Length: 220
Length: 221
Image 1 (cartoon, rainbow over the protein chains, first blue to last red):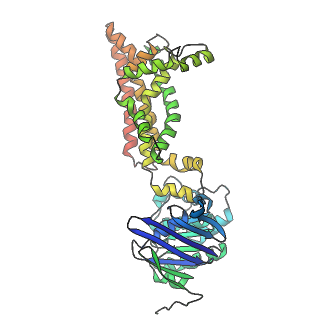
Image 2: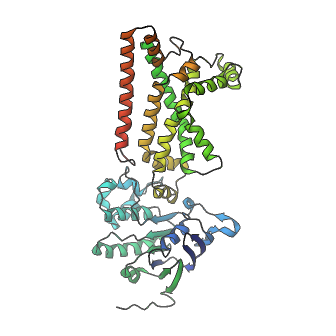
């Protein structure tokens, strides 16, 4: 199990989130400015916050004791809402950034699943926004992270590939057996993927509808 | 004439190489870190831009004089004087051209998107790896501009090298000083040739700077 209990003030936003989750997929939705991205950044350690973060029994943050695990030591997969690819590296090198040991089999597997195998030699400037987004996702997954934090990872995908990507993401999350937090406004994502669905407003979780204990009511 | 040009080129090359090594960490801390005394450091780096070269030369001369700490340490190690030597001119040139190396790098570092640096953290890269694989490739244009400006500015020095070097033929008499002496002695042909060469060198260096700056600032190849 993982537990987060964090607080931080960012301008007008007062972020206060307390939640527990297993190695499952959590969909986070809410209006702009509700603090969804800030929440992911706090968990990643890219944003200062107070409180505690415990991921799969490993301590990442305990501000009361003055302990904070550096972002680089958290073994994260992170996908930003905007494109973050280094323009002077080709796709293959972007995906393997910072990882010393090349795992060819795993790389091929990830790239095939995300339908980017034909793009490995291209530079980011030669990619469509959808392709660039899938490359970012591949980079996040390739490092075999202990947690995936995805900020609207399918926003630039066409509907047909989006459906396939959902299945891929779910399979990957199960293979890696890690928690996956994903910001999404697409109700289909929540229907297909969510173990938990967090709705946020003004920095707080409105409703934590846990499918396993409290089945969410879907209106077809 | 050729002799003075060779000395100028040697001085400019040596100074540029040393400057890149010194300016890189300075630009890094000034671009990315906030600390006590940051403004003072920034002002000190920028000072040579506005100081009369003779003032700078005077202080460098005090610093490297045979009875100073640096001067006597140098004399002890190399059994020669730092003042009125090529090495002394290098010290002065490095100080004199420091802002021309630091500022373009600092600006290029600051222009790197914050997410690229976050990417380095997320991917578990340490400072050295981030510098090598993200910061320097991203700021390549700024580093090139820093090198070109340091080189051109050193080639164009006059007051500082005259104060510190003393215009010793074959050792510290650089092209800009040789030009001055040609004019003084009314050797018009030599003066015209040397002036033209210095003009062309500066023109080429600045063309390089402007062509780099016209390209997209980040990640240009």
